[in-house]
Image (cartoon, rainbow, N blue to C red):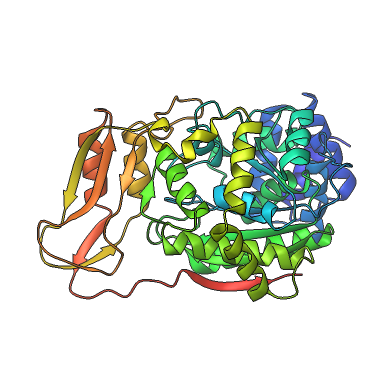
Length: 434
């Protein structure tokens, strides 16, 4: 084989064989195939797409490009979820310990924030001392001890995805359904999962704004995971408004603590119970989704999920006293406000602007590797669709003096005050692929 013939085949509408995908990706990871050939292949996949079997072979080749996590001493079913992200999406933090409290294991590999979306690793690292960069042995040990391990992708785990994602980011090739699906699932399947739930967002704050594109991504990933032996379902959920009332790394940790104590915003709790309940069903721990939701809700209300997360924090080097003393979390002490310009009804319009506002305050990255301020963020005291009076506070900016003017301008363009507005449903559809 040679790289040029593979590129020509894809250029002409051909379907790559399993051997061709495996050879190309192995050569790329080894440094034998240069970036310009890999960029060309990505561009051709972006334009031409991939057939289902071709995508499965490509994903399998990515998965086999590095090590796979194995947990022979963990007898419980292993489950995880993936969200396409958005503003205030902190579901993973309360969900993982709630699932472990219900008897399943959660080996969760997460990412960092970039662009307008936050990252679970950055949120967890707002907890003083919390370590997310774990070796494979440390990750396995934490899972064995607590039922949960929360870490980042290591250089040895799916290195083909790590290299290809960096190329996609700098060449404008992110929004391709085959490339997104193979990237997400190669990492998740490397965790050795028995079941997976996908949270595919729609709306102005979502990675894929259009509902049908999001639905297509969900269907593609369900088919792909099923072809590789992992039970998978998807929820198509709303990101046309913030999730919860707080956005920003430490603020989202605090709201996650509230959820783990049976409190906090209703929309966050609803997604935690729905996705957790579905994972319990897929893992065979309950017979129905409703039964799973009830189990997750009990774990939030009776303190068992909170207890698991306190042990996870301690196992990963963090300070579990943060639960009882929230002042131990980073806090921005300066405030600025965006107020309603007139009487009417709040309607969120351009939610990505809220994520960019957090970045302007220092709470996100403009480029990979930027340092972040975990203390800053936004608070949303008014519900989408609620009636407001002129001068009411719509968004509270918690900042450290950086980027306030830019953040205010961004927040002001994120909403309208209208005469009438009906919010989108939180969960649009549930697709059962099991």
